[in-house]
Image (cartoon, rainbow, N blue to C red; front, side, top):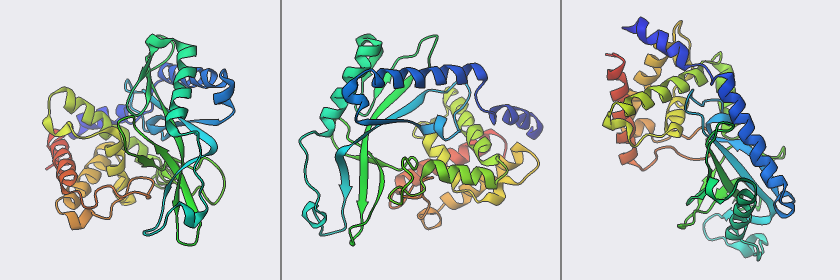
Length: 304
């Protein structure tokens, strides 16, 4: 049994094929050209790739991509210490808001690809795939500043869904300054190097395993996204990735996760890969969902 799975895992651990990679690169180039063709958008944005493709954990035949479009002007989101407000940090409001920025991005994308190819979602624009490019989400973002009492801050990104609310993420250092600390990409890269490149392979394997289980109707997979899998594997210690075979590595990771997910005190300090957000703290429902998925995956591949 383990030999059969190990053969599968060796294939799943690999990055997408060159053909898939070429289509992804074509997509990135097309989006950048679309935004560069609009003088207003081009003058106020920084375009970067984020998500599983940037983090090198995308799965073969499942390689849609996220492209972030960061507003570089004087609009930004804020998080203040308790009791503090804009005036305490000399933050002044601006007339150009996030909704205006998202509308301008939409105009540039429709101008390039046509209305039928661009779907405005709550959080991002879906650019439909064709024979030349893969499906793509274009995410309008602004800088997010997390302030300390002394007025210093660290930067991440913020998006504001059409339905309301704010979503803060920490994808990577977009500028080489102290305000932009190590984030998701840098941390994942370090762990991959420290595990002889096994970390990203195990992430791809567990993501592919999750996809296959979902296709077969395994209910425990439904609440689990690819990002969840990446964060779970991130929280396995490096000594889980030192074995001779992929099956042994995956077994060690899933066993570690299963044990620690069995009780909130054992996993409440786990972070997302960026280590700027908690993964599970005060969310026992999510903990139980993650535990159910991990244990279902263990049973599926015959771990006892």
